[in-house]
Length: 312
Image (cartoon, rainbow, N blue to C red; front, side, top):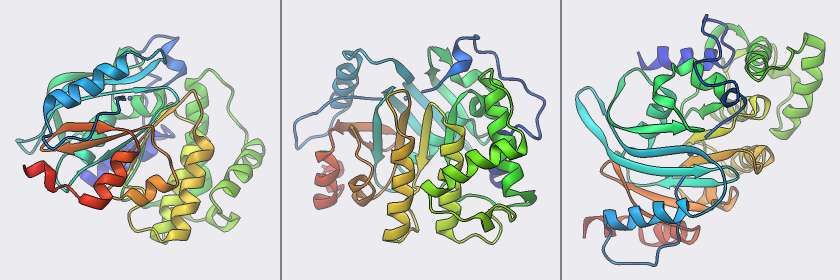
């Protein structure tokens, strides 16, 4: 089921295998995307839910448009409660990093946001540009501008990379009310974007991710990001398995995508990614909740001291 979902959501970027339209959002909402929390909390010895709430309130005081608002989100997988009240607000132009120990719910949050069928929402809400995100099917969320870069990108045998990318972009353009690219037009756009992730033309004739190295798969994900131009990009441990050169290339692609009109949520274990993609806010997840939020300096603190403070 997990692999089938990954294939479905990947192909739904093209909507090649679905008959769904752009979804039930309003015409105005169909033009955009998504998620955040803001605050620079002073360093403290005791972590509390009140600290996370204070961070959320500080974000609410800013003027930027909210893309995604997660309110008391609770979710289960296989009857096990994973998310236990996540609160997060992301505004346009912001980069949020979510860190935390293994099993704290980081990747679960990303899967719930894109509609993984194995995860059941049991409480709370998620709004996307003011509309109920949880009412949309996975392919509808992708068409509306919610993008997930997978931690483990799947291979799709029999589907040429260039065809997949063109169908993806054209479906997104239709959702935005734009005309589709013909193959020649698309190749010009594609060539420009490929340079940003150091990919060569030999990748185009190969099947999607088939025979790609780990770094090549991650670059192909960022190429999709650049081409689709979503309003919310969720990057689930995109840095895992990358050497330093590949990490720099992927980070450069993400930074070239970033504008004041979109938002990024980075899920990572390591501060090193944040050396290249600068976050505005850093959040710590623990036992299914965001328990602490701060600025970029919080990532440095975690790198130096780890998560031992969570047990105190």
